[in-house]
Image (cartoon, rainbow, N blue to C red):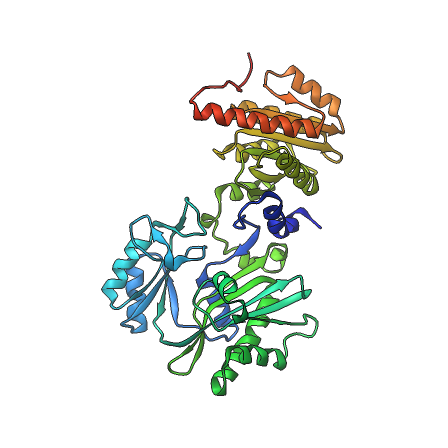
Length: 439
């Protein structure tokens, strides 16, 4: 398994080991809603009329072009809970029903160019650069529908509920019987029996039943065609005029399939990503930000996981997963230090390198360059073993960089935790500690 694929799969492992929240980011392409709805429309899945706007003037022209009086504005921000969020402008809610063109224009002014904060964005929020303008429809019933890759069934699994239009996590907690799972054999593909199970679970009959079965079949085919890891419709609605429509759509795509769908991956909105993730991606590094105070720079995914485990064993909390890989250059190591040190929560950095393919002296040179160029002023604990380790130790010994070299991983982790605690307490007391370059 390559490290990039492991990043997408280790989210829950990290959360379980580190007792961290499950909002740890993963490397999975997540497109804006208007792109996802566009894919549905291309596959013949019924969706409401709509278009995307990046200015209040464009909002007005879209509504007038459709000949609408009522419209719905949806902030194009890659985060759940938009409807309950708030903007830096003071506007409440990222999904708004507007009853006139002037109201829609005014609402868009409070969205565009401002930051949306939801439960999923954290304190930093996400910028809203576009809004989707949709026709307003009237729902008789709202349902939940999703397709995920499920390890328990060794393939795709459809998840449906009669309680749509709300957080599925709340439904799972408060009324788990309202959620029905329908596995699909990926070799056989979706069958009439499986689409019928979905219709039965949602209690639809007559013409609506046939509309639903057709839409479900097309949604599954889209899921497989584009190597999706998640396709979520919330809500899937039966309208008062009898139509069955997908009113909202979220699709995630497997990053390992980028070579198969380059046109999709060009639509990635980097402004919605953690800047550290962007920098790591550009540098060819494998990075996941966490909530601790000890920065980790390791080569090898397994060694990185073990390093985080031993930090936890000694009572500390890792600030990140960062694997520089087996062929990292000194420049990549410097970039890795930039990413780690940009996190204000980091109080110490632990470097743990096993030099197999990777040479320890290359890592050492990268460490020295980074410490010098970035003027690191936090403790730096370095554990190197393997190829050219003697040359690496000589480089560090001859430098004027304050590095604490330790051969034992257990001792290195213990020292990192102790120094992190000392730095944290010193900062609380406003005491200046000198961990910068030596004389």
